[in-house]
Length: 149
Image (cartoon, rainbow, N blue to C red; front, side, top):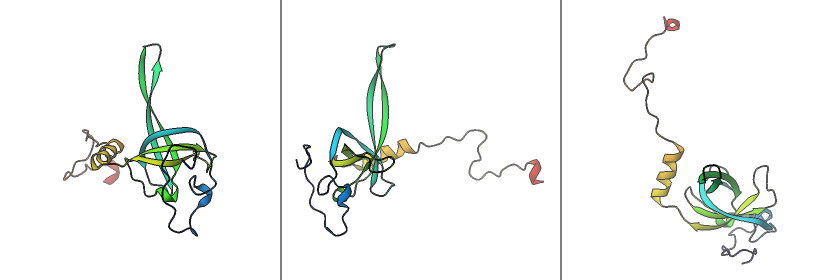
């Protein structure tokens, strides 16, 4: 509970000379404040940044029902919590702005991804495309057009 939240403190960094203490809430000077959110990691393509997606319900009074919404939040990953993978469930806390888009930092990995979770997230991100009548299929020669003759 070193940062004011009920999260477990990770082990100290291996290379203290090379560690970025400026953007670490555990061993640096980065204060956490505001919201603490939980979501699933959907992208790890950026360096020291993950994109966390959370799903929530919004009331629609006209129909007296609820509608699902998603938000994607870029969050900084401190060096002591690396590496994260797609499908991990994490807690993120609000901080001061760290860059143009990042104002959150990962403070805890609550659940690591299983193979089935990763396969499902990959399937959602890249849905298989069905061939329509105008698409070229394998082994078929494309028809010659006026410009080819």
